[in-house]
Length: 175
Length: 368
Image (tube, each protein chain N blue to C red):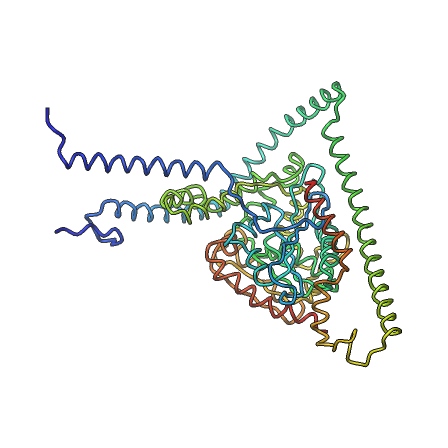
């Protein structure tokens, strides 16, 4: 019984598809190398640069005429031109920056309030039930680094985190 | 009239099967080429926005006690979408890092409009990025953080690290960073954008922003046979392998989602960096402030893709000697500009190396 041709064997002359694929791979490889060399050459850079320059030289006045015409048409229709919309968008970004500044200040205030609240709680705890060194709220103090690590992941009080979560969700919804 | 033999019947059936296969393959091909793949699926929330920029926080899956306390902020390039970092479930860098216990954030620059044509690196480095970092710190409660920048994102994060070394930046990871343009004969874009051949001012004056289509053409034309022919041949050859098709579909969805670069930033990239190599020469200034990479104090990991034709290795290697601070490492990874991080081998080759480097440095900064 005859064996089916082994397509992975490059020397198999009985498999025309294998040979064809092999020659196709070789052709693509050599083509790829020569094309990559060509596009990385000075003459290619010069030619494409000249073509782009010609295109820009020709299209610039046309784009300008189109823009002027559109501005006139939109003006006649009492609609804002692209320039006016762009100007409004720029002003919106400036307003957003101001809002972000306010948000930053609010974050600072929140942090200070949290610190003050923690200090008040700590003071209250000291007055109500003074504990011995090495304990906190009646429980032994564990590794300080572990405490700080936990604090860094859950630093904000529940209310602040909930508020932030709600803001983020409403923003996401608005998008 | 002759009766059809058994052999003829089998031949017809085989032909029918082949035709059905071709029909099915063509349908798969059509679907892959005309519909988008659902990329960027890792659950996230928007925690900050400014203009088109968005800061995403990925929902952690590891309990807080087991998480790395130093958050990680990902910054992608200005061209193309940041979704390449979260390509598809099972092949997503974001998902991988979230599963490794990192608190992951992603800064997405968005799509610049005409109103953004004057945005420059000055704005991205000294306005957008610091504001996003401030929000990250306020949201996470962490004082220090890690930054991972890819391509132009790596350029932005490098300049930020040099200008704001005391801002809490603990670790800086640079992926295929275009930083050193001293070799004007190397491959890549450097020949194309020389002032002899390319009038960047005219281009920006006509379009406002650098169009995504032109950027895409440039990137593909550097390897024309691979991008315009071999890429599609490989798909056709593997069209009946669902894993290959899914991977190709996801990548094609990302590649074809083109976005422009703000005109001001593009001009700066060409003139100040590609032509005058200002960052390495030490003459780069953003909003009047000199950018000296010697001021970088964070731990630095630089990854180079050995087959990168967009940012050739020599455009990154030189930075290592200039960076200040002692904790720095350079890794060379086999692969191309995108494949190094988003290819099927990345999950075994690149991501574990990033994790291995970053994990010990993401725990130590809590213990002062």
